[in-house]
Length: 217
Image 1 (cartoon, rainbow, N blue to C red):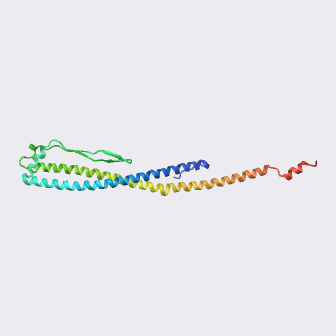
Image 2: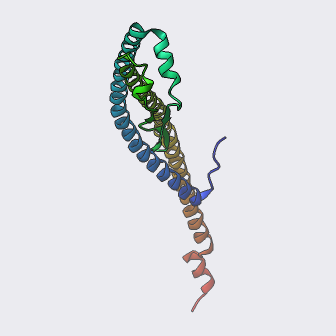
Image 3: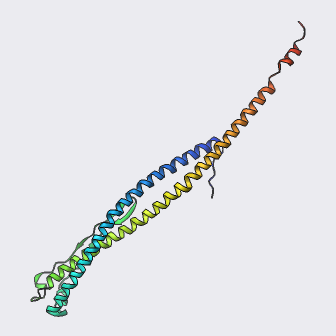
């Protein structure tokens, strides 16, 4: 739906205000776009590092699980797991970056595995538990970085679209409307001057008419 521009000079002030607002919005979006790109560059590196760490810790956890199973079979692993009463907890804080809520660096709360719970005689149980703890933390860290990257990337795309709409559509449209209005106001001003001169000449008597009314001395 087209905007209704107030008539006359009030419309000119209205357009100037909208144009100033659009230009300031474009500046803010440029600033936001630059900050989001900078944030994403750092986050991309952190995400790749977290992915590599996750891959390494998963491989280590798998190796130690196989060693524990080779030394004492699945029974030792089941006994050690059953002796752990508590559950692992992952706490993910949330941050706000340029209006985007995204997860921060997670922390993990993990139940301890005491030596008595470690299936005595199986030396691989404790290292396997530690390896799985590391893998859990690495998985949570990668998930947080990956989610943050996706959210900020989507906001960057939306910001780029808003910038393009203001720069290529909104500002040119307002500038064109202002130019048309300025031309119309100039025309009206010329018409007013012409009418004013015509009215002035119409009500001012000519010198010839003044001499005719004066008569002989």
